[in-house]
Image 1 (cartoon, rainbow, N blue to C red):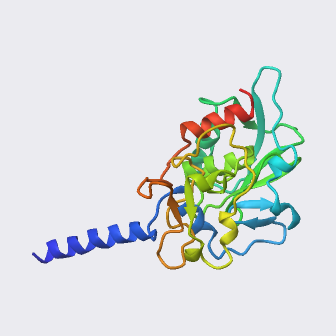
Image 2 (image 1 turned 90 degrees about the horizontal axis):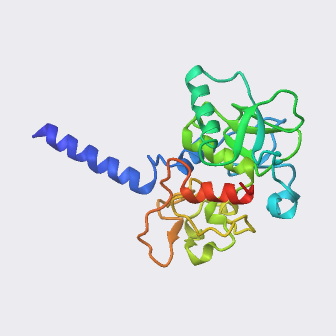
Image 3 (image 1 turned 30 degrees about the vertical axis):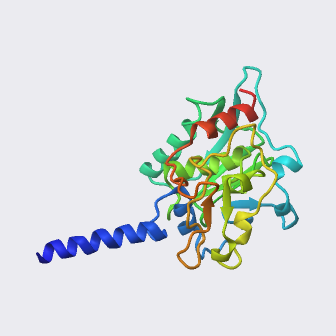
Length: 257
């Protein structure tokens, strides 16, 4: 009987923890935990949420709509993106990162490949937290996958999609037709994570199953939802474990695959 009581309490506690986001295992939950209270080094960029910026002024405009940000398409129709992985990772972590990089090859024209001497490339390192610039920056651009909480398949894909030019789903220019932001429940100083901006939607529908969609309690200060689907508040969202079909379609349309 005692064991049954303990088991019941455990199940209830686990369900409650999942409901309020304390044990959230979504991609945004992992990123939020990995980026919580991090202190970034003097050589790291300005980072808000998991997006890196070169300057304070740049953060007010999506770089992919305010300037060109695409990686160059080759004559064979593929888009080759060079990368370097720092010697920060174990063999297991390296395998997770490599799997995320190569996952684009089976469904898109993107081909991540080890840099030889190319000028522009992605430099994957275990810095402070999870973050990436949006789109191609030119020359070396950091993409941080900290060993403390960022080396997961969905997180790798999420940051690589940023590097290819994509922002978060809840920030889409048309998001008000599909999801409501409950700013009264958002932690003070983190409201910017829910700013609506001009985004590269590529004619695809809003996608609750996108790996770029944040979860229901993202940055909640009181255990209450910060995001609510509209018009049906019961639609599940923010639980993707890998790129959705719409994520893939957007990549192919943006890069004219």
